[in-house]
Image 1 (cartoon, one colour):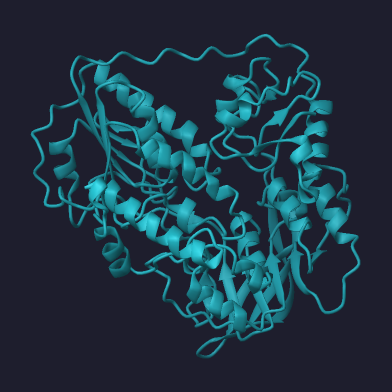
Image 2 (tube, helix red, strand yellow):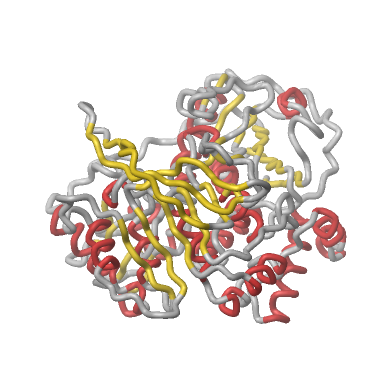
Length: 535
């Protein structure tokens, strides 16, 4: 098997279309395309040409000879897919539609949000001659969750920023950083200056649990905790009391696993990453020895992905325990349950830190006066509705877990965008194919909700840009009046490159990828130190 996919990937068909022998599945038009956690390379027909690795925007593909010990399970995962999905018919199932033509003249588009969704949208637009894209972000740095959301021990995932650097280097691309739309610029300002606006502002807040005691000190949003250890300027200077032997994470998605890994990791290993220095100092003093992840439902319904579970299984010096296995659940029911059953069968090692995946358990209330000292939980049982939905039903049996830190990780939630409609139930902007109205569009989590992976935003952006280009070709966009906003002189690409250079130089001196500036004043100061050659 020459090449193997080694993590959750974009499933956007970049590698599928690059492959000369149609050996990567699911492909466009096949069941699972654009919704699968990852793609799979058929070992029978791969010719080891390497075209897929060049096309992959997240460096998810590796030659089988380059796999590390922790990545070897992906060989089994890949083989298992083709046992169930042989794909003997190699007839193309999908024809890529031609891009719509554009009217003569330039097309100016504002993109609000410099995260993966915004940059993928810019990339799609800049494939057309005559298009200019200005990407806005309220922070002095771009890349969104790729910079401030990916766990520092997942440096390989952050390699997608190399693609972003290529995107921002294209002719017709520009940044306006440190600019908040709704404060420094209005929606009306953007519409006057550009033919169209794409909002790719993500989901900046977290969902609440709605239980008593949630406001106590020590009850923390995982969203904020992740931003803290990643050095996000909004949260980098928060204080988190890690003077507790047990932390509890409510939720069992990929973010919950990230938090558990960071809390139990060897700080000296983290010291070789781009983790915030402030967070690293706190983790060195941490007394946390156990992190318990609570899931209301069972192992089969766990929200984390198989690649993240494989990474968890490969941890050294950290025990992983599984509790709350439903009666009658076949360990071989899915790849996820098989891996969890293997973890459950392990023998704990005395003295190790541990991560406990506890299923069939829901939170009831946080106990404490000024701060959290315990979490009351309830056992649950599974019930399947007529439509097939599996729900967790409390049994009434309760237990109290002593803890001084409870992190809720039950999903992100977007905020309303000034000037746009907003659906409070889904926390998204209503749209059709990314189109809110002709001239106004959405992409990423504000469009579809907090689902998918970094690369998923590429497929999402392609749909939105197709709607925008169709409106341009049909003459439905309004001619801009010109730049009228107060932030037209905001820091741009040169300022970001100066920040990037300074962070990398500081990192190189310490044997790290970078040392982040974690407050806006330092970021702006570094951004003003632009070399003369870039001015």
